[in-house]
Image (cartoon, rainbow, N blue to C red; front, side, top):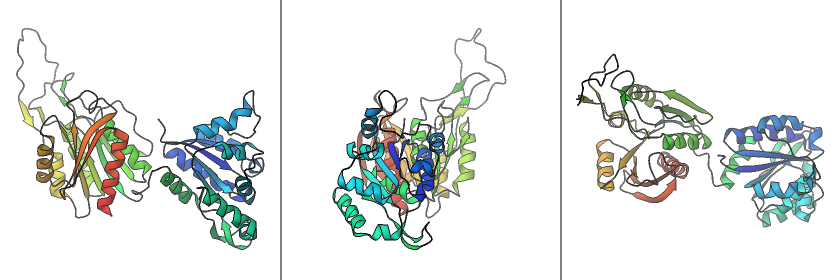
Length: 397
């Protein structure tokens, strides 16, 4: 599953080489990127470079292949956002006039997706009344115009006309798509999955946690710019790109890793379903069922990681807890939040089969230490993860 489908248009400005970094960042953030290059752009950067980065063939010709005449339609329909970087004076003029004489200009005319352009050209060309008029016309139609910046230009002159940096283009693209990078520069710790408490070498006490909520939290945090550590029990899930994964098995192993890492993190989200009890004794050999009608297990309570984190929480840290409940949800969640000094408590209603464990959806109410709350109906776990991170970012200012 991709975060979004983006068409990246590249025109024949010297800043075309910077578009390589734009494509790379968008791919790392989990987006599907399809590149469209004008003929002049290919003289500056090889299409092979963009094909290797995005994993998709670069679109070059309007009439390409047996169905090439419809290429602009498929691209325009797939796109959730079209980014043109660099945007030369020529492509801006085409857009303002509604001209469509190549694949990129035709795609721009056909799409209903938002369009972001990053102008790049000689300062005299940028300041020409025709170019400024074209930009004003595009802005009046809702096209997002980013820059240009001022500084040294490729022609050796100084002035307005530099394409803004790739980071700014990516940030603006995310913002237009309803995403943010509010966690940039923050270090966050997420726990996920259930722990397994061994009875013998082949049996364990566990729970139904799939780890999907924790992994969604880790993925969205990366997309929002955070440095993410994911401490995970066994899940069978693949760690999101850009996440530092630490695998653990038992509750005590998870506790040791979390306590070790917590002091250096801005936000800690305890989404894991940590076992409350563990067998007091673990058999060195498989317990045989022969002549055994009943097996008595003596269980010992595990240490409460969330409560320990609450006691050691630093002044500017944000601590997020989860409470999987089936009844009296608000009462249990608020009591747990207060007792464990949690800033945000996410209470999951796991009483139904369409949400919670082994589902991509959750029913949740988010409680805040200041007394506020946010009740959410059935919602994808990825969307819930974004809401949680936005709330954490609000607390951090």
